Length: 227
Ligand SMILES: [Zn+2]
Image (tube, rainbow, N blue to C red):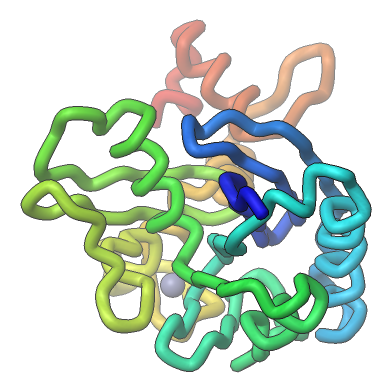
């Protein structure tokens, strides 16, 4: 049997995305569900299983040789568990075992989503050809990952380079991770929008209060948005 595809799974606070990917990085099939982030752990897992079932039901699935997971963190790759800050129902949740159970015992690799994104950027994207890089992603949270000496550096637990929970304002707002003034608490998409509104920024006529709207206002010269 030719197993030239990898099943990819992206677990975020907003959506759960799956794909079958070939050895050139091309996405041959996609599946996606919203993350029921406020629900209990089993309900969140059911959304993951729905995504995986859409992949395993496809004729292409016979070519899948492994599963790769990038999950919102923190993760623990050494135990195969995840505790995403934005998914309270999952604390030390045995995601690797649960995914293996629905994917026919294929090998499963887990890293933090920032580390997975960094691997992709080094292979196909902005960090191509660079032996040392910090890649960052700004969405529901702020993630990151490291390329050191030409290689992905996930660290022992799969979280290395996660810049989102580095404290940059010791007197700043409390963060769900337990620290104060984390990068994520200031600069994630929802927090960019929240801080702009708290500082007096007002949305345009379309009423859009997203981080993208704040960025557009900043480009247009709005002083509060720029700050
Ligand atoms: Zn934090």
